Structure formats: C-alpha cells, structure tokens
Image 1 (cartoon, rainbow, N blue to C red):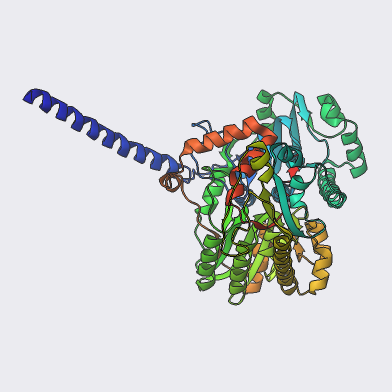
Image 2: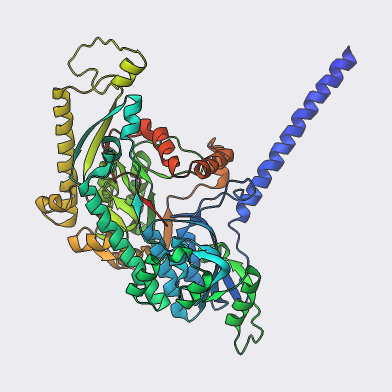
Length: 597
C-alpha cells in the first residue's frame, strides 16, 4: 500500500512538473515568436519591397504572429505600417521599387484606400518603379494598383471594376414578424441611422444624400485611375458601363486597363526587366517585406530634441465603457479610457502637439461630450489637429470639431450632425405571441420608464423628445463654437446629413484636404518645431498582453470564420450582440454603410 501511494504521488508530482515545464516553454515560445515580428532584417542592395495585398485594410495592424498558423484567416493590413514602409522605401537607396502582390484583399473605406494610393503616387516621385500582379483585382485592389508602372494580370483573370454602390439592410418587417417595434426619438431630416428599424425601404432624404456620396466618391476614383492609366474619365466610365468585369483579359490590355497578361511564374522576369540598369545588367534583386521596412523605420534613432508630436488613434464605435468584443475584432473608442489618455497627453510637457486620428462612425453622445471636453483641455495647452480617416461622422465629428485644424481625405465620410434615441417595445412579442404579462408597482410616475414590455405613453415620449432636442442643441453649439460659425448655419448643414471631405471643406466643416502626414506637418508648424519624434498613442497591446486579458486567440478564429460564413448577415449578428451594451442616446452614422470595394 505504501509503495502504491509513493508511486502515485511521484506520478502526480511528475505530471505537475511536466505541465509546469511545458507551460514555461510555451510562454517562452510565444514571447519569442511575438518578439520576432518586431525585429527587422538588414535591407540589401537592389531590393524590391513586397506588399502582400491580402486581408482587410485597417488603421493599425494587429499584433498576432499566430494568425496564419492558427487558421484565423488573413491578417489585417495596418495603414500606419504601410504608409511608414512606403515613405521609408522612397528614401532608401537600396530599395529600387515596390511589387504589390494582390491576394484576397477585402479593401477598406474609400478614404483609407485613397490615403494609401496617394502614398504610392508620392513614392513614384523618386523615379523608382511600382509593379503589381493579381489573378483577380477587386475594385479596391485595382484602385490601388492602377498607379503601377506595370500592372500585370493572369490571362484568365478578372478586373472587378463595376462602379460605386452603397447598401443597407432593413429590419422592420423581421421585427414585425416577432412582435417588436422600435420607439425612436431623433433630430435631423437626414438622420437615417434608425431607418432600418422603422421602414422597409430607403427614405427620399436618405436616398438623396447617399446618391450624392456615391457620385462624389466614384468621381474621385475615376479621376485618380484615369490619370494613372492615361484614360479620360468619360472613356473609363464607359468601359465600366460596358460590363468590364466580365470582359476577356485581352480586352483589358487593349483598353489600357492592364499592361500585360502573365501567369504567376512569369512575374519575376517582368520585375527583373524593370530592375535592369548599367550596374545591374541581369536585373537580379532581393525581396523584402513591407513589414520589415516599417520595422526598420520604427526602430530608427529618435529626434535628439526630445520634442514629441503625439498621434492618438481614435478608431471604432464610441462607447462610454468597454463592451465585450471578440479577440482581435472591431475596435472601440472607449470614452472612460480615452479621457484619461488625452489628459496625460495634455499634461506631458515633452508633447508639443497632438494629432487626433479619427476613424469613427460615432456612437454614445455622452462619451462624445466627455472626449470633446478633453480635446478642449489639450487645446488650452498646445495645438491639436484632427486627421480624419474613413469616417469622422456624428460622434466622430463631435470629438473633432473643437480642434485647431481639421484635415480630411476627399472621400472621408463626415458631418452627420444629429442625435437619436431608440428603445425597443416588445409588448406584442410578450403578450400576444408568448402569452407573457408584466405587472408593475411603482412609487413615482416615471419609475418604470424604458421598460421593453410596454410602449412609451404620450407624456414619456414628449420628455424623451425634449431630451434629444437638448442634446442636438448642445451638439450644434459645440460644432459652431469649434468651427467659428453661427449655430443656425450649423443647423442648416447639419440635420444628420453625411458629407464627403470634398463637400465638408466647401461647407467649412473641415479646413484642408490631405493625409495623416499633412496633419502632422500642420501640427509641427502650429507648435513651431522642426525636429521632433512622431509617436503613436495609445501603445498597442502585444500579443502576450492580449492573451493575459482572457481573450483567447480561438475567439479570433471563430469570429473570422463567422464573418466568412454569414457574409452580409454578419452585421445583423454583430448588431444583436452589442445592442444591449450601447447607450440609448446615440450620435452615430446612418447604420453600417456597405461599400462594394
């Protein structure tokens, strides 16, 4: 019996020790692999920087070195790293050109695509080349690659250039089937965020504003592509209307849509030919990934002045407190956290100016007001400049309007100055369909206001509409004060209407059309500094830090697979998943605009 206990205890201790050793080894392996992603390799002479255009274009790349190995789908492409690498490649004499390899590119917003494309156009000023290859080009990928000196496609490939469209999904009839109604209070003729819950088709004001948006964005894309491909806008538009997407690849060459038809194994010869010169007669070259070039640039010595221009990324839906999201899923602008971060930037004497990079369709009106207050706090101490990305609308504009200067891309979606509140009424579902009844006792008249088991009465509705009206008055006052305009003029261009950056500049909602780099230049000028270190905030959490927050990587895998399986229906799932955590009073963009990029 003693021997049995001795061997049993020894076995248990051995298993525990083995588990401990495996755990330590796994942690070291994870740490080692994660750190490898930030280590740069030397860039050799006669190099070509390779951009694998594969995945979704986001503001910042996500640190997940296991994405490829764990089957979580394509990694996100960080616009910040791409812009850094392109700028560095332009200035690096060892890099002779850029090769863009098009894969399953999911695109991005028109503005993020435009900013990336403008960086590629600027790269060509160095007299270096850009080449691209794809078996197929989606519209977003083609828009980017149309800047290439040599645009290559598979002989059986397809260019999906079909025009611009925006679409949304309407839930009213579905809600009616299950016995749920939306009780809505809003200000703004064009504040159409609530339309999917009230209508079964697009309202005329919404159709009007979306028609203007699509026309303006498509015109920008046509202008850019026609310049690079040396085609007139009219001719290019006519080619698209001819059903370009379904034409034979030879038709693309004939009409200057692409330059050459090659199979994938013929790409190297084309690049070698572009590399040939007096010193490199054979055109031999080395490949270096854009991430490696970005890491090299990020690890370069910082300014000795000690002066910093802070670039603070405010990306995603605006919420007051962090709501549950899956690992690596959609970002949020968490008001309670951003307020603390911005206060630290305001109090840091080494930071001479702040660039607030906004890419948000809005969200919580309360959180937007709190962030606005901290923008004003920074403004009282140092320059603050806003750089608008794909969206800076509704709450996204609210947190931008007080800045000293606002820079937007021509295709940024901004404005949407309006506010709404939405409350579900599930009384029909509960009473008629489920046979449930709720009995209530209360001490005061409004003690049970907002209960989903009954609709609002007339007095409650009047109170809520008054509350929304006061919120709109505050929103428009913030915009008027920030932009130096009258409140009445803001109300005229407000009404919840969404504008492109081009239109917003004409209306005085933004000051300049340009990129993040342009916004940084303005911030330096306003701070009266030349040499400085540009530093990104908030610091991105490493892969290990994310693991320690109980956000397991398998969630990212499940989320990615769910997106792929549900397709357009994923937005319904996401809305249902997050609706309970949202503030009831919202300053948000009209639903999720779906671009065919």
